[in-house]
Image (tube, rainbow, N blue to C red; front, side):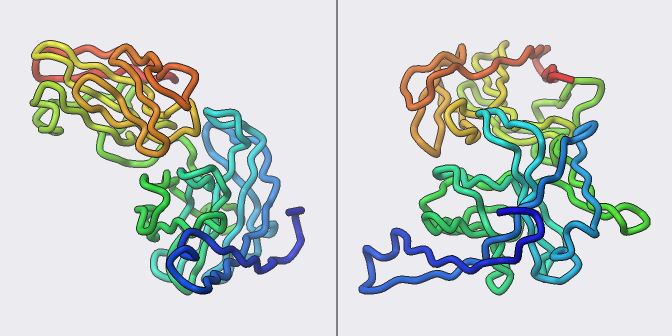
Length: 267
């Protein structure tokens, strides 16, 4: 939708129709704004260009001059939520890649294609999506004139990256004390999710967790990595064992001294 055009209301009917004689869900499709290229991982746009966000319940899609891991244009859904103020989400639904919309009267994010829904904190609340949304810190500049969205990664289960490294003790993530167990999550300063798996008593493996198919975060399962969205399987070396993914996972250098794990991440 072009910059400056008003909202339009669209009617979508999803999987719930199979369970009812009639089904309808009205979703306000947000205005899409050309936001330019991120600088230093920050996407900035004058508030004068996004007046919707000056009102509680308003939302916009920011289309950045950049591509994501699977070659799509970076799209961020920003909403001025009633319950939590400004919130920013990766705008592609993890089910099939449709762009999402904010429904303030439900305090939730909704996919207008297949009716997946997510809470204000990005947690999936209704299928067919099975994984949560990526969340980005969003705030106004000190003078209130600019909206700034940090695309470099939000706080998550891993400690923040420092000098290109994510460092943590196994006791901080006790699941990794067990051989074959794994942890998937974000680290502040890393623009993608990580997956770390305990391969043996002396070896940890780490990968960029994004599935090369549509970017969902994979999970470790003993001797495989699994994409929960579409079922792709990967070996412990990251190689594809079962599609629809066609490319391997991206490995990350990791060191482990028996108690401390250090994962090197791209600058």
